[in-house]
Image (tube, rainbow, N blue to C red; front, side, top):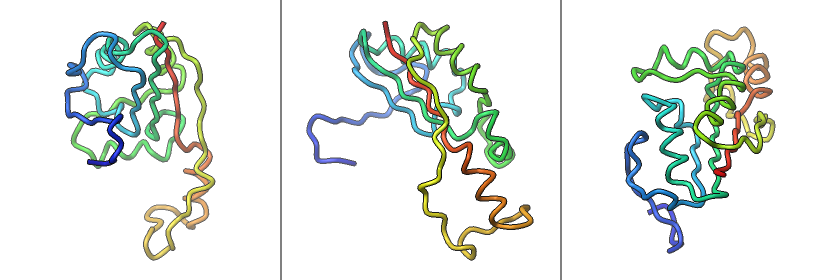
Length: 147
């Protein structure tokens, strides 16, 4: 397991058919996974279904429209990925019956960037341009609350 805390459990399930009862979960967290959902609207409906009233869904993604430097990820991944912008995330959360409590892009300014030899610039002219292009967009966090 990932933790010795008996209050935390892990299970494997399908995004679109979560193996959990209605209103059985306090919090759902998705870190860098949501955009892999085959049908993101169904996934959001499932998240809404399993959340208790007042429960939260924290959805963090680095692959989103405003973060242009991540768009090339799809070329390297065989699974179709959902590329939404900030407003599309908000609209989809609301369509699924979640209140959007917060949405913000969290810049990656505190991340220690590996040395240049371990982190090639590839198509970037200079390393600094690559680092600064990515960092301001960082991670898009959308927080939904079940009514």
